[in-house]
Length: 402
Image (cartoon, rainbow, N blue to C red; front, side, top):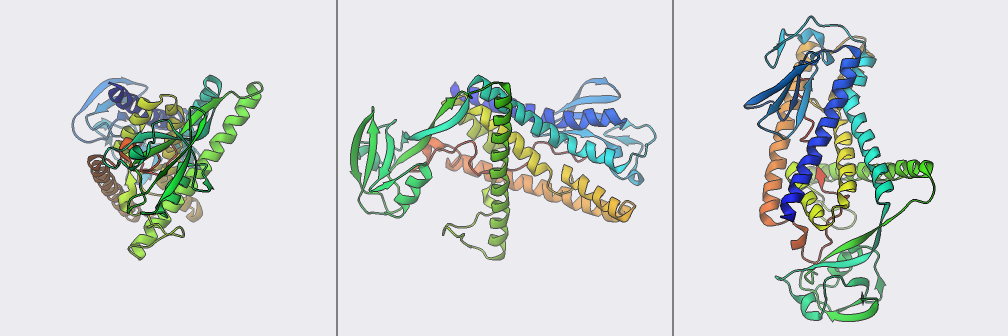
């Protein structure tokens, strides 16, 4: 029942983020007088249902509800103008300056950022600032009973391993990985009392327990100004970490392509294309968080909204960043790119994006089947936090019609 609630909440959150993104494009486009013949929820494939028509826009719901789009034909090159889009007849095209088209293109990203900020403010007002308070045993793994046999209990707090104090679950994992088949002593707290337990990790450096930080929500001292300032600071910090993570991900994938099996500075294998995950992973992991502690959905929503904004700005055809890239070329050249060249770039860019979506879908299904998306089955690993660097690819606001 809790899992079903979590899945429902995640689907509702993703749908909301898609609508927010597309409303940004739609509202700014309408403000400047662009045509918006179709507003669709879902990918424009297969059957669809028209739910209404207003302001010169036909609102549709598609069977493949993995994204959304707003058709804005005048956002592209007017030389490619046709008489209809998705079966809707168009009026004669108008010529819009680059700055207006750029504002329409970036509006979806802007709305995602604004929405993330507003959710951050609501979280700080309603709950407070989330601060990790220690590392706790979240689950004992039956298939690896080392920790259980040593006397570890769920809700035990890990203070140190041997003589090494630990502050994060990653510290515990890293230390145990260096002590494979070697006895260690875990220094714990149980009901506020210190406790030392000895155990020997297996040949993989695992002891059969899942760890997670316990979040404490601390109210912000001060008035509305302090809350608004703290929300901006927190969002900036989280976004900076996400940008760095995305950069490392792409750099690692590139290194792996150039030199298969390459390892990073920490000695761990560089990430590969198999590490890219999408909407199924988002729903599964988010549902687990919802079932464990619904309050974590606030931060999860914030991070996914910012992730969509960042990925959408990548200069890739069919994404908002692709439109901006074409506009930049047009501004530098003083005229649009040749129709044939732009058409080829858009075609192959869109096909590559579809191919990436297929890869991401396969990765998600494989990870789900193997249990890699279920943090309760992680053996001697931390339960994934909402900001864990599992790359969530932008399969939501896919907008091929713009």
